[in-house]
Image (tube, rainbow, N blue to C red):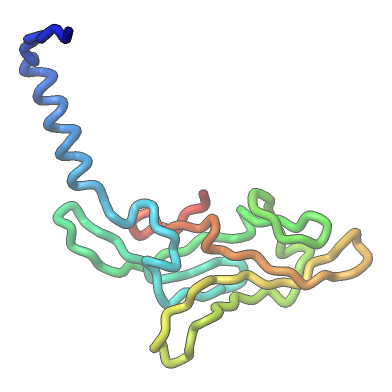
Length: 148
């Protein structure tokens, strides 16, 4: 048999619960978006990924803002392979490019991926062509490109 318990909620707890619900209801929708879903006009300047990314203000008004992230600070070359969490890949890689399969120059189809391609030195002997999907770890955090 279940016993009914009557407990009054204190005004402080009630206010905290209301504040939490309000915060959840007004959370920014683009805070965890992969950048390809909420950014456009992206490109590579040296080792810096640049883009116009969606930013939403407190009133839920969206606008596009300039954003960038230095890939050399988050990508390394491990024995000829581009790897997340390393650094200074550009010191041992050449022919660094950004490829976007599905992208058309006239912009009538959005890109499906953003692929970093490079020829990287392996064991200081030869270079190996390889690639890394930037959308796996680069995200748009309300108008700022971040590594996760």
